Length: 248
Image (spheres, rainbow, N blue to C red):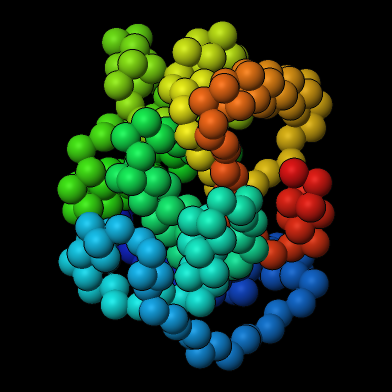
C-alpha cells in the first residue's frame, strides 16, 4: 500500500532535494545558485485608497505595502496603464485588486474584467478577491466566467456582477456572450491581466481578435459616457515577459 500523504515529504524544499538527488534530472541543470534573501522595501498604504480598504488590510495584519505595490496603486488610481514586473509571490495581485475595488466603491457604475491564463488561477483568485471585497464591505459580486460556469451563473455574471474573472480561451470561444458583460461594455471599465502571457497560433489570433472587438466596443461607449478604460498587467521579470509587456 502507498504511504499516507501526511507521512510523505512535501513543500518546495523536498522537491528540490529530490531533483538534486536524481541522476536523470540533475544532469539537466545548467546552473545551481543559492541567492541570499533581499531585505523588503516598504511604504505607507496610499492615503487616496478608500478607508474601507485600509480597514480590510488592517484586518489582515497589513500595516504597510511593498514599495512596488504602492507605486502600482498610485499609478492606477491616477488613471495610468500599469505593468508590474516582479517575481512570484511578491504581491502582484494587490497591485490591481486595491485600485479596482477603490474604483468600484467610488463609482457605482464602474466594472472590471480580470483575465487569467488558466481556469485554475482564476478560480483561486476568485476566493481571495471575494474575501477582500467582503472585508471592505463591498457588496458587488465577483464571479468566474469560464467553460465550467453553469448557464444560470453566466446569466448572473452578465447581469449582476461588476467584477468578472475569465481567461483567453473563454474570450476566444464566447466573444458573443461576453459582449453582454458589463465589464466589456458598461461604464468606467478596468481590465487586469495576471500574469501576462504571449499566445501564438490559432488561439493567439482569435484572442487578439476578441481583444480588438472588445476595444472597439468599449471605444464606442466611453466617449459618449465620458469615461475610460484603465489596464493593469502583471508579469514575471523575464526578458520575454518584458518584451510582451512593451508590445501590449
